[in-house]
Each structure stands twice: as structure tokens, then as C-alpha cells.
Image (spheres, rainbow, N blue to C red):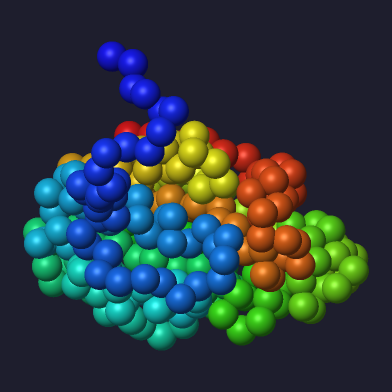
Amino acid sequence: MTIDTSQPPLRDARQVADFRPNLILGEHSLCPGCGEPVALRILLEVLQELDIVQRTIGVVGHGCYGSFVRIMDVDVLQCLHGRAPACATGIKRVRPGVAVFTLQGDGDMANEGLQEVLHAAARGENITCVMLNNGVFGDTGGQQTATTVLGQRTKTSIEGRDPAAHGYPIPVADLVAGLQGVGYVARGAVSNAASVLQAKRMIRKAFETQLAGGGFSLVEILTMCPTGWFVPTAEGPSYQHGTMEATYPLGELVTP
């Protein structure tokens, strides 16, 4: 059927469906162009699609994403900086029948709590950790983190990260992938539609691994932070693709 578009329709357009998952209760307050709300959305969509919302507990670290606890309709608690995997371990051991996940930034997981995630992985804890990696401490102004890539500008590396002065970036997913007791490790991104779909599949596999008792699972998701990167909002995805993805290639590192 051909639709006549030479004149306005006879009746006003109306919204017939809300594409926002009903687990998101309100609007986020993060900067324009931030990739973290996209990561949150696909995480919540996976929980709904697996029908495990009522038996899921999340542990949130400290960062911009900490504000998500106000708008996500999932049981969540917030722990000390970097300690989410240890807290999640306690929850899972007391409540082995629930799905337990952590949501952490690169500053929280790599700078403040690298030992926590590594030891949880080495113990084979049956939990799922999600790291939102934008290479900066966004919540405190955009300082350099352990994952900041070489040449990347931050508030504490204005001329770009220099290995002679700042050392080299730490690839968390690669470190975890090399440990026994790990069931699934992957690295995705949310810089374009294809990457978002791929990252969602990775999160689903991580939870499926946990539900099957397959051991520790980790999904690192590269997220945009134009504000912390000193780039225009619209250039965030291309900047991420040209800088971060060169250091942190996307794909699955460990599969069941």
C-alpha cells in the first residue's frame, strides 16, 4: 500500500508503545553523549528476557553510574569503592539461588578494586561482573585511570598518557581471562548499533554462564565520555572507536 505524504495525515500521531524497559523508572542525569545509560538499558533488558528480575541482586560501585540506583527497578546495594566483587561473593554464597552482578566503572574496578575482581575470578565465584570502561574518573572530574590509553588526555594527563610518566594501561578483561575458574569473559562497546547488539549478547551469555553454574563471568563494556575526553558530544563514538578499541579489541576472550 502506498501512503500519500503530499499532505498532513488526517489524525495526529500518537505513541502506542514505550521502548524504554519498564525496569527504568525515570530519566538519568548523566552528561550528553555518555554511553553508560545505554549499557544499563541492555543489562536490564537481559534480566527481563531471562525472566530473572525477581531473583537478581546487583552491587554497584562508585562512579557516575551510581545514580542509576534511583532509576532501576532491581534490588541493588552500593558498597565501598572497588569492593563490589567481594560483596557480591558474600551475597551469592548466602543466596546461591539468586543471580548476582556487579556494575562498576574502570576507576572503581581497576584502580580501587583490581585485587577484588582478580581474586573473585581466581576463586571461580559464580557471579557476573560488568565493567563500564571509559578510561577516566568521570564522577570526580575526568582524571586518569588505570585503563586510560596511551595518548589519551585527561584532567591529570593534559598532554596525553605517557608510559614513561604514567605507566601502561591495564587490560582488566585480559588479566581475568588468564585465570582458572573463569567461565566467560568478553569485551564489548556501545559506540554504534551493531556494537550495542553485540554487547547485549555478551551480557546475556555472562548471565547464562552464571545460571548454569559455570563460574566467574566478566563483561567489559567500552563506554563514551565526551566530557572527560575533551571532545564534542557527537564525536564521542568515533573517538572511542579510534582510540580505546585499538588498545582494547572487542570480542569474546573466554567462552563456556
